[in-house]
Image 1 (cartoon, one colour):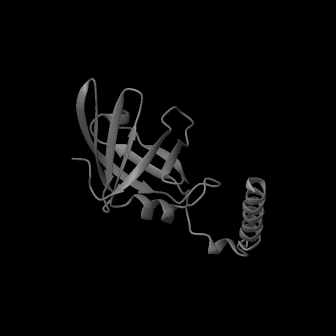
Image 2 (cartoon, one colour):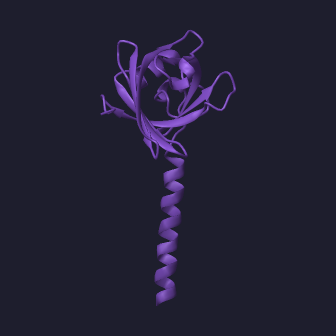
Image 3 (cartoon, helix red, strand yellow):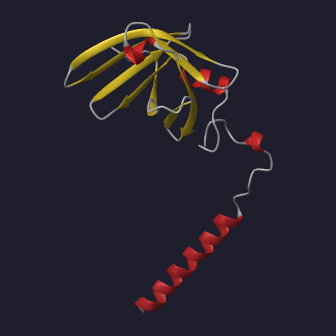
Length: 149
């Protein structure tokens, strides 16, 4: 009796799997896909702006954690902390015609040099690849509003 019951459950599961696979159509037009959902290509400038403007990015490196608030007026504030204590900095950000996020800290971070990144979104995670090819590439997540504290 148990083998017959198992066979019925297996048959039902297979039928559901076939139905589920055949009933999920592929989108005919890529415009049907919401923007910034895959890591296939770099985000466009408008996508970058709508994603980060008014939000706080946060991440963790080997020796510290950090947060950066990207204000809607193109300014940013940041805080990092770790075994060394805590530091803060201010700066500016913008998106370029080349679809890059560029930022420059004004006090000491990044040696006060302008750095530009291509952004790739993978689920909730955003990967920033420095266009200069240096080791300043990193990953971050976002929360709404100013959460630098």
